[in-house]
Image 1 (cartoon, rainbow, N blue to C red):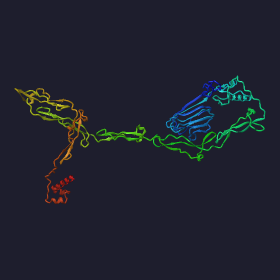
Image 2: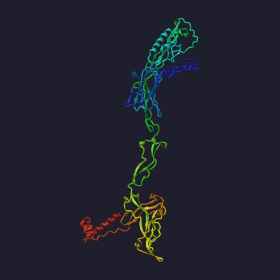
Image 3: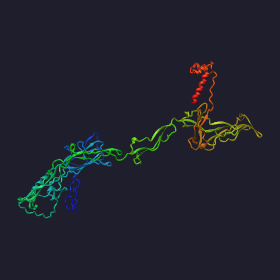
Image 4: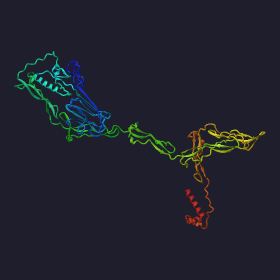
Length: 624
């Protein structure tokens, strides 16, 4: 069977959160909260006060930050992270209890710092935050005793070893012990509400069943033997103040020879008292902290760690001046680090063509973030400040406009007499910047031209001939028919003046027609001005394939494409003869030889000779 916290075999009693055996959690109160104040000034800021008697203390930063928690007593003694010195994680004694200081250092961890202690505290403690960045929130929690006070009446009527409000009482004892017990009871009853009695482990014995026969005390021995200190226990530490206890043995009073302890009265055996030993301080040592996170997630960065000179004394580790560690080589406080090789930007394609044929458009290229293994990764893996542009504006020059024309239709609108041929005319943007065009303007080319297929024969009435073929083989065109005033004779028709039939309604002589969609056709602009006036130049025009809705198409027959360039003005250059330009003197050749034609007088007096020489020189320069 198991033993409960009351030391009874088979008991199921346990210690509650208030530290009371068999308690119901009502003898104490849980105090908790979150410190979320927004702080502006750097430095120490008080968060919460931990009262005397507090247990189960938990002070935790709600998320990781560059702030630090600090702890000090009400008397001003620093316990953790005081005087702007950051202690490494570990266990620190303060306020009568042991605090565990945790500071997760893993890069992937998001947990913040924490102080943990079981308590109870024997003095008031203050918790601070060393503020360096926005406060993520500090959660605090501790337990304080309730208002239950132990009454003397309850103490007087309890059985030996019976739990008192869940705590073990003191054993029945001698008269002197009873006096001491009631004195302590009076002290307890006089305590204010909220006092939390502390149970000393081992102070009270286990409960003994009432039917158990007390052990027979051995007869009192004679005084031939007594207790004698024969030595001391080994010191608990080799330096920095340890503790040891005297060792007592039973010896013969005459010979001082050690004998069995049964020869001495056990009730007179001295109680060993703790003695300090090895009070000299331990050698100082370098206390090496954990490495900080690498300053960069990729590439070469830096990491830091705290190096403190510390010394052990009285089971406490104290921070001391660094000169005490000068006999030791100081470890490095900074080091380079590299978590991985950084990814880099790569330009995968050249710039595309501009999105517009003229005017301002855009062009693009493919830019990817590539890891050191050659894999395409998210853009966040690369330095966004160094990302090459993947889109930019492009200027293709000003947009011009021009008239685009089809060839004349092959058919005349009239089978005989006067008719017309047609063509399509459209104004569109011109992509050839070399043509001197600024816009279509108002000089729209004609869409019809006259044609005549010979005379026709005709009676006095309006005579309408049959409709001609459509002026276009496809798309919109026109049909013509002859409408004349005739006089019908036997077998013949005499054509009269139209006024002879003016009293009659004249039938229409033209109508629109549409045979079928044209599909794609070649359109071209007018020829540009010839590049030279003589001796052979060239002229150009733009040719474009357009569909029925006048959009660019690729369905035209390449073999039917009109020429885009042709020669022009192939005749020789002939200087113009000015009848008024004559030599007034017979010796103008001397003027030419003396190069006097640059003067106005000689240029007029010997006009023919000076002009001839000037033309000859310009021709020579042109051939060069």
